[in-house]
Image (cartoon, rainbow, N blue to C red):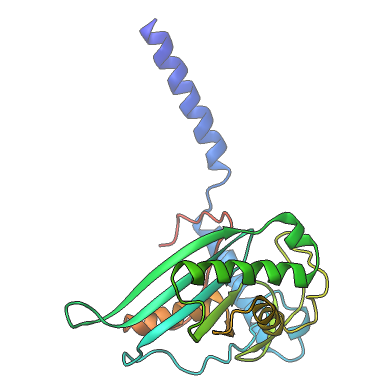
Length: 235
């Protein structure tokens, strides 16, 4: 009986390995992905191919990164899926007299009716969550710069203006596509009576550049891969 169990376990492992083998990328597969990404980035940078490129290479309007003298309280909103995050970032001198960055955050789930209703419904819900977060931290009426990470196709026109090109990831809120996302958020914040939040738009790689600036890491090129990507072979 023990031998039978061992054979069954080995058979299961072999079957599992056969299934997993189909999902393992070889070096040549990774090189193909690399070449395709480079090609699409080049297409995104060219005027004549930009419109049809899958990687748009749009400007961020972020002109500098932190250099270590920044102090104060900042609000961060990360909206890119069915869950989004509100974060309070405190930058300044820590208890040991050294410059430090401290954060507090809370995750919120977006209900389906907000995702598929109207833009006003969606951003009213987002501003409600911002208000809830600030209320919990006794900062509802304090003026706070708000960094807004919005992980959808957007044509950036300024640091506080981005036109939503199209929804993805199951979002279908009407009245948002073709409009300024920052303006929609700002209007919702005003309707909610949260007087202190002043939103500015950026993409996740731009946020990574800012983080690298805090850590004194020279930023080069940012890539954020989420929503189930498993890429163990990187070296």
